[in-house]
Image (cartoon, rainbow, N blue to C red):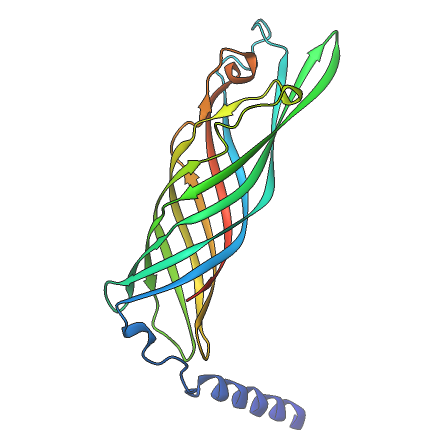
Length: 234
């Protein structure tokens, strides 16, 4: 009984300590209408593939019987501009460079033998996201937030010449528009604000370039997707 009482007193002391107001770092930070920073992080690029209506039709003129998408790890970096709209709402612009790759594997049957052909599809995106950031009330030196917006992207690698040893290989459109949703936490440090953020991005356009081969003919629609883990310094 005495041990239980001591544990309850200890837990109560910890709770009171956590609720006690702490000295705020950068107390006037959120009152500034404009500030800048930079971001760096990791990403996973992916495809959402919708197969052609006749993909499973045994009478079709194609040897492809399976398509597999293998996401790969990449990274991104860029500057941040943040405009304060109200106490809890900001407008953010981030011109990022994102580097990544997606592996697309086709299984075919030749002379009754299965064959695997993998296309390594690299992308280098210039991104122009406009993001609304909704911030919760700051508690001591941290504040959670939600984000959402649109992100036009230009793929600089989409028009890169395909090497002969890479053939056959599909091409992607060099432009797409993504919608983005995510969340994060702001940490107010002594000299700057540090944030961790997770964001999901989904392209709304069909990025597959048709070339009248079975590799594009077996796909009805292909959209890009991306998950980003970012570290902001502002």
